[in-house]
Image (cartoon, rainbow, N blue to C red):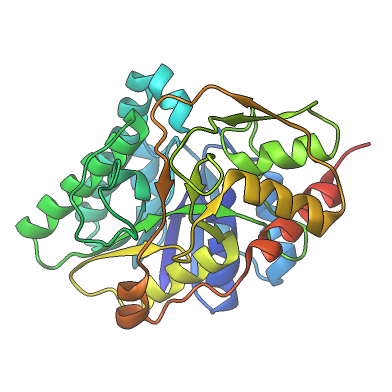
Length: 331
């Protein structure tokens, strides 16, 4: 099977490319490097010892995307490409709606033209909004608290409508919780081009002295220690979840990908310090727009239907994330 991976040089995309290659899939990668780096492609090849085609394009460019489908017999697509920062989406909603939705519509039109009807979509737990109860199940009511989440929910709606119109499509929506960690080789990991939008890159930048301190957004939530609680999943576990989804493509399916366990921001910071024996200075600031108190997954459906279960611990995530930064830090 030949799989097109959009956003394949990004954090989750690159790790999924590694797992695809390790499982003997042929891959074609497209990325515009807006929030990733071209050298990641070479690192994927180094980790796996395998070669593959890659293209530098923006998938909003229909003509260039069409050319890729014309040149390659694509059997399935894993769609990662899209802007992903909650805070930025609140400040720049139009940019998020234009990019995330346009790119997906363009991709789907080209897939349809070439009769490529197998898709795994990178969705998000943000589509659950502020849940009334925990853990979060796939059949919970859907709503959003920020434009990033709204683009994911709108795309889910587009994909559901597409499936209703054409049952030849096989579409799996994967609702990620909070991916952190890095490949154990230290070659690939989370390395945003600009100011980090996610927690773990901030923690490691404080640990390495690049930033003075970590801002923790709020300590007055109704949680174990007042800080936000999230379901952190190792990015390699998450990548393996995509392999499971590809193996079980059949109609329209929806799965949470998480560990089923909530960890607070302070618990994560303290675990990172302990595992890596490095201090992480932090300050409590105001809550961040669009954030919710707690969010963790019910993971039974993914286990029962596609055999997916996360195996790596919070300690693994903290160790691997720091190892990646230390190995790639330019002194």
